[in-house]
Image (cartoon, rainbow, N blue to C red; front, side, top):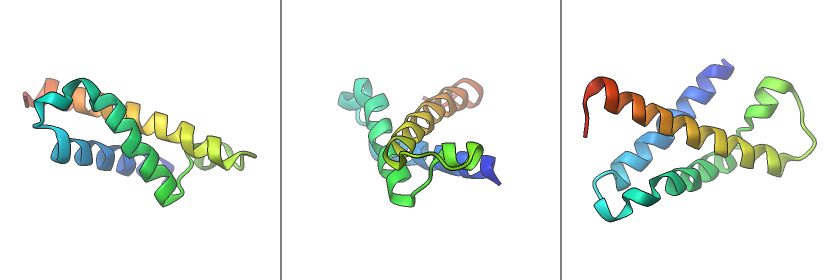
Length: 90
């Protein structure tokens, strides 16, 4: 169940970035930062902390959500790279 949450947030983050910003050439250099901003909105909005999911309760919810957003953003970047490499998109 925990890995499913990670997968859903990762795919959702990647989908939002690709659908909204993927074709805008001017924003290409900023996509990693925009991905992080989207991941921050998702983790805070849905209240998902990866640290709580995997490690139990942590004392600082703000840092839990923020660091979870960094993980989600990076995983969505890896997902983008995999899709481009194996499916030949872009």
